[in-house]
Amino acid sequence: MDVKLIDAKPDDLPRLLAWMLDLRRDDPMETAQFVPQVDSETAMRYLMSDPSLGRVWSIHADEIAVGYVAFTFCMSVEFGGRIGFIDELFIEVSHRRKGIGRRVIDLLQAAARHLDIRALRLEVSDSNPAAARLYASAGFVARNYQMMVKKL
Image (cartoon, rainbow, N blue to C red):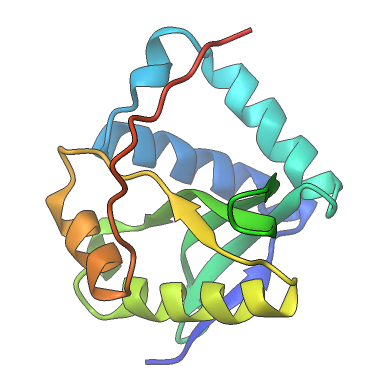
């Protein structure tokens, strides 16, 4: 299966926003209680408009759009420079368990190297063991830190 990451364009926004809703239904996020959906939609538009913040890609399998990745940049003293955060990764249910997710992770790693990224980070919920297995199989390791957040 041919899997590609294609830069998301403004015309892709309706599909991306629908996938965002699907992601939140499949794997409910704790932030839903204090971050309105409209804020997430605004952030997606902003990320797409400013490549200095990261990238948004549509995932295509055999030329069919099947999901998306929101990938953001930040700095890390610990890792010696810019790191990439896989903020959201979604593949439609009908296209899961076909090796697409693993191929996406490989493509993300290649893109990150091209973008001079020193490390990749992501979050995975305890309620999504399939995703945790995928990430572990790709070399991601759990760290002994608790992620904390404060909405401003």
